[in-house]
Image (cartoon, rainbow, N blue to C red; front, top):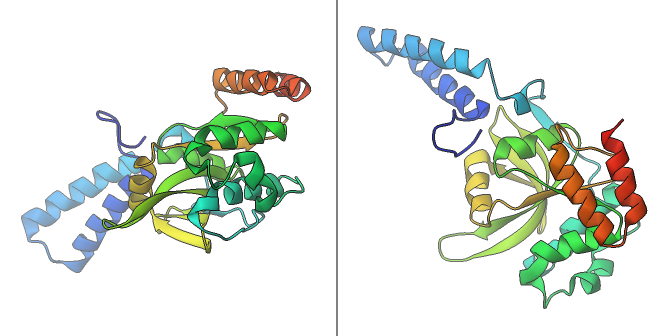
Length: 247
């Protein structure tokens, strides 16, 4: 898992550390004693990397959900673009322009964290929040589910929140792939993405069909999401979501 004090780093960090040490060893830049110590460290880290968290076991090294459509535009409309991309990928006949009014854009850009789930439920989707660490997001993408999220885009001089869709990753190259803004395929290093995502509260959700359970579903969280769907007026879809747990 990522970023929690006292827990082991995620598998991709172990892999990166092993790779760096192996390069040092093969370059022969170390003295005999340091070379021996480095070999021992590599052996230890390799053992850790061979037992990744349960969320990563069996996952492919590289994934891209190419079926997610791309809608380009500026940050003021990033929420409608990201929501439209996920809904369209699931078969809903929708475009960002049709969602702007429902989301109250551009005036309500600062309240999209509640606006996006509300509108998604109007389309009968279960809004399933994800844990606040990268491995949780990658597990869903590996299962074929795009993740709708918010991150901070910009630099030290200028930045703004942006909604985007996580559609892929490459664990070997340590980077994620986003549909974001004017970028159909925005690549970000794992560390850069984690930092930008954390600056916006690590907000990330799945928008699932009631019959489609997330990977490694948390039953209580799914039932809570189904209850919120029912309270939005989608009782039939909510019942389908509850029934899906018993299959």
